[in-house]
Image (cartoon, rainbow, N blue to C red; front, side, top):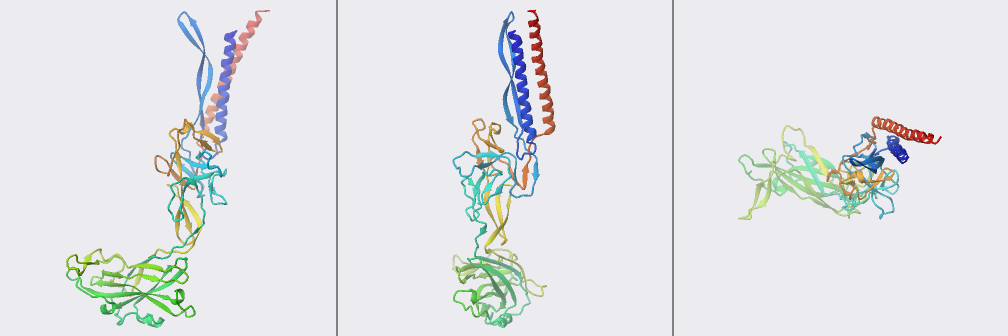
Amino acid sequence: MAGLLGSMYTGNSGLQAASKGVSVVGDNIANTNTVGFKSGRIHFQEMLQEYLVGSSGVNQVGRGVQMSRIEKLFTQGALQFTGVPTDMAIDGDGFFVVKEPGQQQSPNMFTRAGQFRFDKDGFMVSQSGARVQGYNSSGDGNLSGVLSDMQIENTNLAPKASTSLDLSMNLDPNAEVIPGGFDPTDEASREATSNFRTTVVLYDSLGNPHSVEVYATRTDAADAGVGLGAGANPGEGEDAVWQFNAVIPTSELEGGNPLDPNAVTEFDIGTLVFNQNGQLSRSISNGASIPWLGANAGAVNVEFGDPLYQADADPVTGDLIRIPKNSGRAGTTLWGEVRESSLSSIAQDGYGTGVLQNITVDGNGFVTGAYNNGQSQILGQVALARFNDPTGLTSNGGNNFLQSNNSGEAVIGSPRTGSRGGVVSGSLEASNVELSDEFIQLISYQRAFQANSKTIQTADGLMQEVFQILR
């Protein structure tokens, strides 16, 4: 009787194992459409509970099966494009790090579900409200090295005053020389004493734009205060001097007359000397210190390209000499076959106040903001965590995991470093559940359940035969 009862318990262990297997498969199937879900796989092991001593020695009788562990399979799920910039997927190894808000002492949680958004306070959060962890920007695009809640605190970009102005152009080599140089007295005088005119926009420290007129005048070397000389190579004599002046209405400057819009202040911003090959031989850039009205004075450095020579002092005699520097063709040139001077490029580093328009996230996890003033700035970087044994993580619900002794400590850092994967913005990682495999497992557990029930039924029939002996 003891053996028959044991057979019934053996069959019952099989029923329980098959039931747990069905539960695991059912959980996988139920989460087929859960973002970032990782399917589970159940492991079983045999039970040895009875030893029988016979003529051939000690024999062992199995007493059924028991569950060993339920393992999470952290294989890569398919990436689904959503187009939402705050949706993120991990291509490779790693987990996003999230933390419950207002509970800085609570443990970090880890997830592959990247359905993130920005809440009303500017924090990047998961769908359950947990705050995404990363490295925030200090406001100038430089990232902090301290892991914290990712937050965009200010949607405005502070203005930046113009400090440099780069001008590249091709000037007309046939332009007439204007004796006496540039005269800024009035509009007519400026037009009459210049060969070329263009407009640039400079910004003050408050972000206010200022239209600045730049005039180029071909002048005599004596008027410009520079001397012409022979080039370093035969046939490279210098023969053309151009003077550049910036004109700004005094109404936009400290001490100016706001009631007279025609009054201007002239700034001598540079002199260019060309050789007979049309190359920029020397560039004498003066720059300008502009006393903007109501703002800090702006020191603007002006460049016209790469001159052929740079001026330096002879180490022996101390005389001013020319040292070969560049090609003389990168920037402003003086080449023929043009009917008039023309501007080819202009660049300055200032800008006005910007309002955040949208964000992008690149593969390295950098969150970059694009502003309506045409500027962009790094706002932060999403962090990723890696584990030596991710299958040892403890499920915490809501697609989140907690580290355990089996998983090891989380190694947190930047994406695409330290074996961590990259971030794919505008996409989500789908569940890695394979339905065909799950249905096969479901059939297998169903048959196992039926077979184990037959074991119990058979043992019960044998016990009925024993009871018949008493009749």
